[in-house]
Image (cartoon, rainbow, N blue to C red; front, side, top):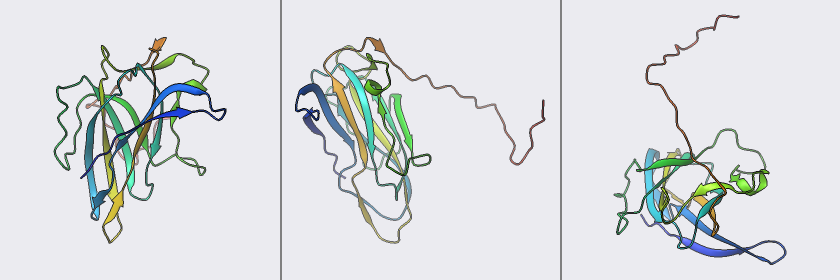
Length: 187
């Protein structure tokens, strides 16, 4: 398995330099035999000079990827890649995407710049809780033959720190039981 990290400066439609850094994280040229599996890819270092994660866009093969979860964590020196085929990533959840609920026009991502919440972003880089990211991909490869996957998530960073830092809070209960096919009482 080979993971590739691409860094490029992006320009908007008018050709003006935005100062944003784009990075694609995930599996590149990953050969997948038939079957269901979880795999962790990374960790990938946040680009030098990045201070805010402002946009995320999945670039996935909808025919074989069920969902992805992106994790962030503090940097190790040097970053230690996960073992080939490792199912778990370490860190805190930054983003999750699932195949269900996508628009016919394409996959749905997050762009904090288009929400009217200018300045909202995930803090990243030096002195933040996210100096590197990892991507867990849940594959449902049901084809009878081996396929090659290039799925991942494209990330856009800003060199400016966020005015309003964001974080994900995960809440869950392991004691909540909802039995199948039980009709709820009406109020």
